[in-house]
Amino acid sequence: MQTPAVNIYQGQRPKEYAFLVHLVFVVISFSFISALTVRLSGNAAFTVIFVIFGSVFILLGILFVSLFLTTIIGNLPFRVAFEATASGFFALVPFACLAIVAELVLGWSAVHVFTSAGLMASGGGTAVELAQRGVSGKLSIIAPLILGFLMSFLWLVSSAALAQLL
Amino acid sequence: LKINYTHPDADSSSGWFFTSRGTQHGPYPLEQIQQLVREGKIGLGDYFWDPLLGRWNSFEQTPSLSSLLRTGSETDQKPPNLFAAFLNPGLLIKNNLQGQPWPLAFLVSGFAFIFFFLQVGLDLHRSGAISAGQALALASVGLVYGTLGVSLLAYITWLLASVFKSNCSLTWALQAFALSFAPTMIYVSFGLVANLFFDWNSSIAFGVTGVVWALIPISNVTNTLVEGRKTISIALTTLSGLILLFSWFWLSLL
Image 1: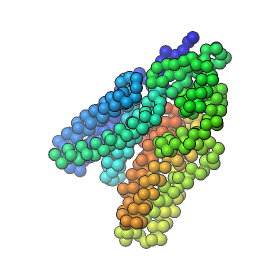
Image 2: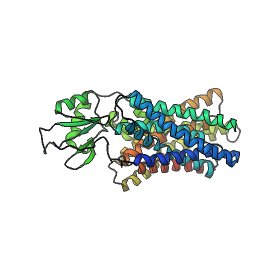
Image 3: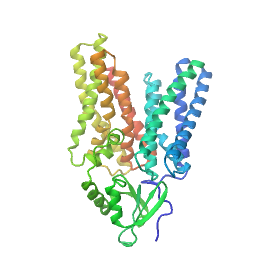
Image 4: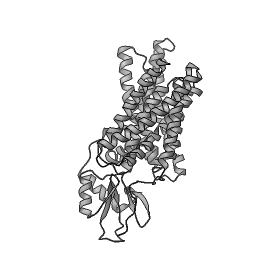
């Protein structure tokens, strides 16, 4: 019987390395968010440090979420978890764009609001991506949401701590 | 779970395939698939592979499969799913709001923005910038924003999604966008309590945060509108957010 060789994706099947493109956009977006966090200091060195810190934070965060999902969801290959998480965090991009516009165009200081909501949206996005890769069950929905919330909390605490240190 | 659908005309004895966690299962007889439907392991929103067409389709796009699912869901009505309500209004519409008049959804966005704008008015009244009557007038502006404004936002997004051959109807888009403001409704309700009983200036902390959180379900709605085309969906979500941001900005100038 003829069946498709690869059939783990729904709808528009993503290109094989689409998650890498998503990952690049996520890191760039979070770098901007990080830079906005210390924008008012006016110190270029602080901005560079925060951009590096933000990039490392988001990459480690995605790695941690992927590893955690692999641990708690039986038989989930790491590659599937990592692809789903990287593509799920692509949901961060609109929030980063809006944070930039709100800060730089409208003059509103709301970067933390957009960051928190963006990281939570990324958790939700990861749950959706997992579902599209054949992972079902309440755990695969709830766990990424909780992890997104945790990342949001960790970012608030760690960025505040770094700002204090600097 | 996803179903690998083998067209009945092609080989009726071949059965059904599905994949779970990247592993393919099957073939299974139709009865077993029906059992999976009854157990809630397969539902509306899942996709399948049609080997004749050589592409993925949603269940809804294949009458033989969607009728099977309707039979399953009719026998086991799912209770309203709170996660669906806050994250994916499209799923809530499919599972719980079929047949409901779509304008009812605007109760959610309407009240969300009445409460939000009322808090803005109360904050301004507390600082002496406006009178109590003007604060109430702002609440009525919120009603217009939460109904007509959200309708316009949904229409613009639906129109743009139509360029990419969206199969969703305008009424679905209107209903889904209005329901997307459920997180806002929760936030601003708490904010109103804090404002009225504790004299907090809550419009920024609760109102703005609540509206930003609406972008989470909105991103899922746009994803459904463009059938999972992620980049387009992200672009439409960004556009929706920008429309919201600039409309507040212009309102604040007034």
